[in-house]
Image 1 (cartoon, each protein chain N blue to C red):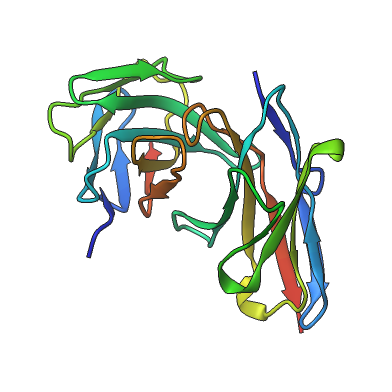
Image 2 (image 1 turned 180 degrees about the horizontal axis):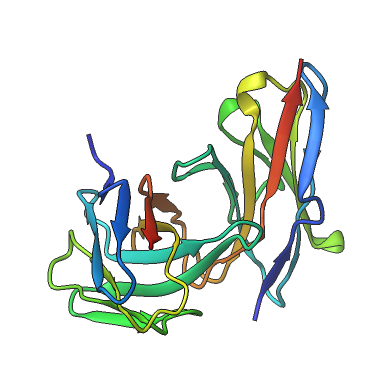
Length: 113
Length: 113
């Protein structure tokens, strides 16, 4: 069975600073990888996904993620954080697309002025 | 607008009562999912359905039941057998095939008193 580790439960960054949220997965075959964002009391919104091809994936809201097979990682990055990026971010790994998806426990991002 | 609608947003029930959470989608998706979200635990899969009149248990199905009589609808019943039902519940749907992702509803916060 696959698993996902998000090692940082809380991260605080200053507005305008760069951001990297870590995600490591465990799965024997080529994974389907997702990053979702959740504002308080809301549902999840897809930021980006990796299925195959180019390992650097561009998403919405200026986010990108890089799939590194050798490190079993799919870290999320943003060059300059905005106050509106404060939310909880979830990494997920799937088998055959969205089937049998496993979510990480999430990373809560705080943005300070 | 296409999307997933969960209702109600907030729900209060007395201990020992069954309660049904509604989830409707107009995305023409085949698959639908129910997740439970508790602080610090990420999303845990309760039930999922890949086709009408068929559904499978997820990781934490005990104390819950579902039905899938229509493609658009996937209601979740939280029964009195669920030991700790107070939580945030999220419904999602996804298309068929490999290169798909899930779309989420806005969630229902259930409080049992």
